[in-house]
Length: 283
Ligand SMILES: [Zn+2]
Image 1 (cartoon, protein in one colour):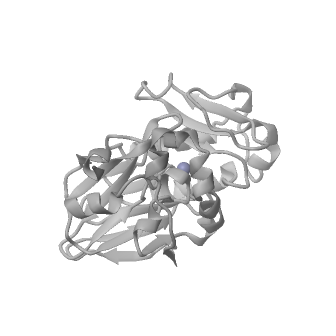
Image 2: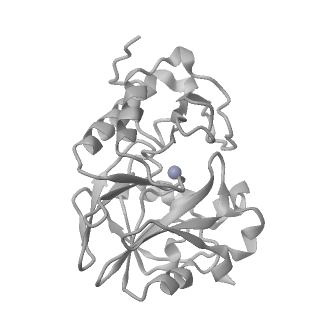
């Protein structure tokens, strides 16, 4: 049964991008990524914790698994309990406790009809930080700070494919929803500048079913640096997320997820001053 819940895109180089069950507001779907080396395999994210994902992963590889999280959100870290140990940035531990709890998931529209398939249980967290490198045998994967979407967001660079796995933090539309769960715009800008110093050939984002070009970082950076609060609008398109005391406000170019050029971010329009702390507006 678990086989039918999961299906994967083959991204080449022994990399599978698995569409996870559950429905994310906005882009609609979320992927976890599996990188298979000659000695070990690295799993990036574990979805909503619906069904036996571990059995599915073990149908793709018989190598010992290392599991990491791009960040602590409900659709990325809720299946962690199916594995003994998971690497996560400690800055996202509290966020993950809230987001991945059975109560949060049972009450989430994202889970839909899958409520009876939710898995839960304890696992050990290992502290992920910039520079931690995972040796998979014929390839290594290195973690980098990628704060913005969450304070503990991380990206992962694979030495074989030269793909950079960015989770939700460098993607079509980045959610920067209030400085409690996300960073300021300036911190996100610093992340984009930091990411530009890395050498990679493609971006693999968690809600995008295809490879993105490295130039996407420049595109996001350009939009960030030319941020004009006058052009922010509310409510955002295709946005079902409700966050207490946050007024989600969209700042994008392009016409929505069907437009390949669609790019930008969603921020808390009611707390603009906090969001812009340390940032210099051009206009
Ligand atoms: Zn997220």
